[in-house]
Image 1 (cartoon, rainbow, N blue to C red):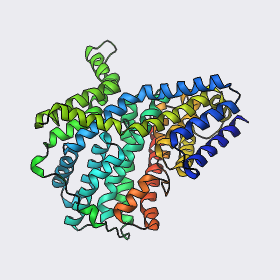
Image 2: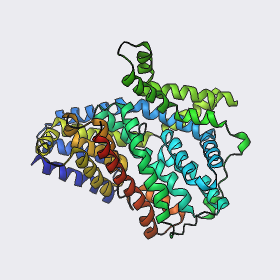
Image 3: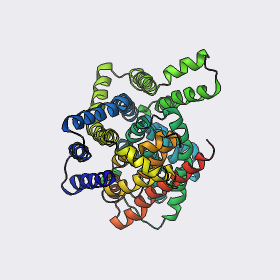
Image 4: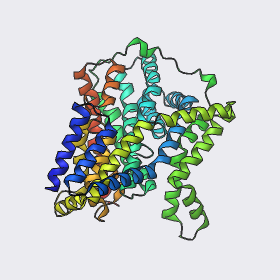
Length: 438
């Protein structure tokens, strides 16, 4: 019966969001309340549980999300993303242009949310494809695959960050394992897949091609752009490596441990970026702060979405449903990693949003990740991989890709949907292999 209530609750969530077009946050709160009551909680306990879920979820990720949005704003507005692209394309040349764009997408994708990175990078992709006379999908898919992978696998993106907190996973290890899994996933779903999709003729609309990037003279230096964009990864990476290599009482390990705290690392990165991409280039501090404020305001919808999913997760925990599901599944022969991936895949197909699919799936399989049978960092990556699977017409990224590349729905399914599915399957395989060694 508890499992049936959860299934009916998720069905109701899908109906509210997809059919009745309810606001996603409102839908999550309604379903959370109804599931709590159906599971036998009284109204007072149900509301307390929802409040706890909202607070716990946002308490962990709000600083990381906000600092991430600020860093992304500085990287995009300063032209740092554009500088990284141009430098790598020039360095690798036309023969290895896919590798250049793949690296660019990965570097830029870590510090920028998917939609922002897409809008910044796509005019450059169109320009490069036109000047090199290479097929547009051949040029564009490696970059888009990298952006999608960072969105689904790596903090500080919303779903991976939230799931990391829910599973009490180590964020540094999650990032390192995520990068290990991401590299083959991007190569398979970008450069290799683009060769198989060569017959799809993408011709972007002229109004999208005409978007002009900043002049090269006004761009920041490459190394400043590169190091600033990757600074959170560098700081957290050094902290994680220090945990492995240095003794407990080592002073350097303690210092790196403080700085490597995800929230502190993001704060330090923003402060550095304010100087390197702002003040050092002649911008006034009030103008920079105004821009950063605007970047945080744009996060409101995302934060409410994550908070709503966190509320549903907490109801599943407090009502005993998660424990019930855990008892049912703990004797199953199915790997918890595969199960988490599969549930996230089903939700992704139904809901469309990778963020909703990832966080909701995490709430359902939470006992499997906290029982000690599997590394929580790998559960984050398995669910993240599943949350990217089978993106189709209910996925915002599907329509962005379709319109900008001027494709039919059939060709978008043959390209975008296949690329996303390839990322999801490659990610799962990578996680399962990594699970054999750690």
